Length: 354
Image (cartoon, rainbow, N blue to C red; front, side, top):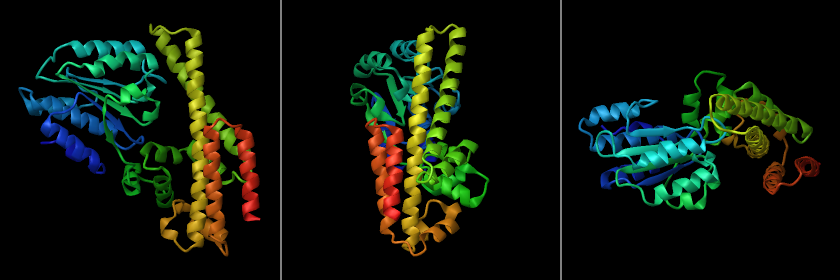
C-alpha cells in the first residue's frame, strides 16, 4: 500500500515527483514549498512512511507507526517550531547531531522540519554541512510556506517539490458546516490556504474583511485591525518564550523582546496585506458582475450588494481600482509609509469612480 495516494489527491505534480523518487531511490534532501494548508505536512509524513517501510523488517508495521502523529517510529524525527522560531539547540541536537547515528531499525532515517523558514540563520548555516554531506541512510525534508526566507545555500541543496493551492471545492469540504455563501466566499478568498479560509470565518477575520471592504471610505479601520493582530501576536509569542525560559531554555530578556516584536511586525504586515488583497478581490468581483460574469465572483455571500453597486457601472473602472490596490501592495513591500500609501490609495480610488 502506498500511503502517498490518499494525501496527494489535489497535488498531482507532487505525487508524480515523489512516486518517481520512491521508485528510483529518494534524494537526500527535499524542499516542499507551497501555501499553508496545501497538505505539505500530510504528504511529508506519507513520504517518510514509504521511505522507512521500504527496507524495514516489517514494512506494514513501520509504515503504520510512521503515519501516526506524533510518530513512535524511532527513525522519524519531526520538528515543529514551539515559538516564533525553531530553537537553535533543538535543530543542532535533533537533526544535525542525530543524523550521524545509524538507524535504530531498518536502513533509513528521515528528518522533517516544519516551517523551515522559521530557522534562524545560525541554524540554517549549521544545517548546511549535513545537507551537503549527509550519511547515505539520511533523508531530510524541509517544509516551507515562505521559501524566500530560506538561505539560498539551503534551498539550492534540496530538490524542490511544489504544492499548488487547494481548489475552492476542496477547501469548502474542509471547512465543514456553516452558511453556504460565507463558506464559498472564504474558500475562494483564501488563495488555496485552508488556514486562511478558517481565519476569514473567525471573529477577527470577519471584522478584517468588513474593514477591508470599506478601505476607500475609512482606511484607518484596516490599520487598526492590523495593529490589533500584531499586538496579539507579540503578546502570544512573548508568553510562549517566557514559558520556555522558565522551563530552562536559555534566552535573555532582550532576545525575548526582540523575537516577540518581530512576530508582531510579521503578523501586522501580513494582516494589512490580506486586507488589501480582499479589497482588490472585491473590485475584481465588481468588474465581473458589471460584465455579467457572476459565476466567477469570489464574494459569493455578497452577490446582491455587488449587483446593486455594479448596476450601470463600466467594468473598466473597478478593474482599474483593483490595479491601484495591487500597486499599493507593491509599494508597501518597499517599506513606504503605510498611512500615506493607504490615504493615497483612497484618493486615487475616488478619482477612478468620480
